[in-house]
Image (cartoon, rainbow, N blue to C red; front, side, top):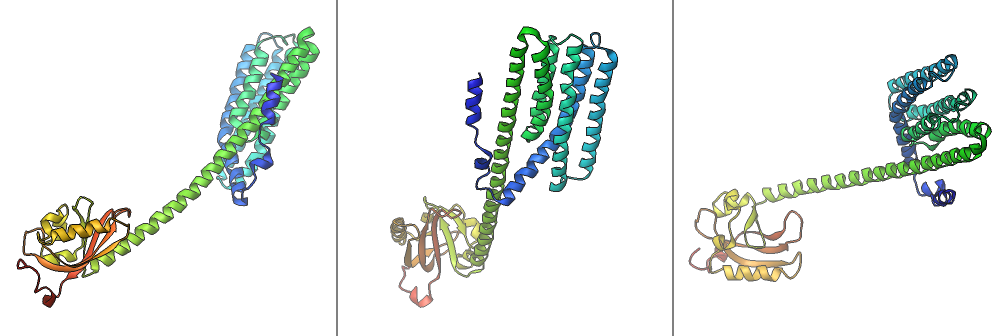
Length: 360
């Protein structure tokens, strides 16, 4: 067991390695967040100490001198009340980094004093011949484990309680527990070492979690900025397109219209919104459809490929007369938000449209 513990401790990354590459802002962020976790866990530690003190007094009531027992219990409860009062005072002070850092320093001191109070149980039980009572190691070990849970964000705070709480217990067992005393003291010492290892490992896990959260916040902020910029660019482009006199129509890969600019109504004589969902076969003149399809197939060869259409006749959603247009077809199938073929053009001049088929 000792060999396994030594191996585990040797595999824990050093503090220098753990903090390598951190900026000053990130280091401060970790310290403040760690102090905030201590602040939130303090009421648990205070309440756990008070409850365990009451349980200890009830269990040992008939076996330990009541004056000593009540004095010890009163000391633990009074100190718990003082810690609660100080915690409330810091709470009123707010959650600024400076206030939380000051509380963290106080909390380490308070954990040390509380640990010394619990460590006094060992001599008290030994004096009254109860050193072999199973309750003593159980309550002290449980309280030490509770300190890790409530103060795991700071290994100093956890050790500040664990060392003064367990060291007197180990000494008492070594001196007053008979032939098995040294063995039991060794187990207590090993338990203290395990608690120390757990405290350091817990803090390092918390540090990594805080750092990861900080980096995620930065990435999210950068992503949100990019999205906002893209949204502004999209609004600007849409405003330009919708204020343009040119006709802009986006066709999906299967030939259905997914967007038609407001200028379509003036050019083709039908509201643009009514053209959404219509197909190329419906709006393109039958004589021009093979050419339009061939141009579309040609533009498939390359993203951004632009193929000119000298003339193409289209009509609106009301099955009105065909109108001669001239423009270009651009492949934007893989452009997010477009994902289709974009036709952009305008009305063909009257003199240039005279040779177009008789339907126009």
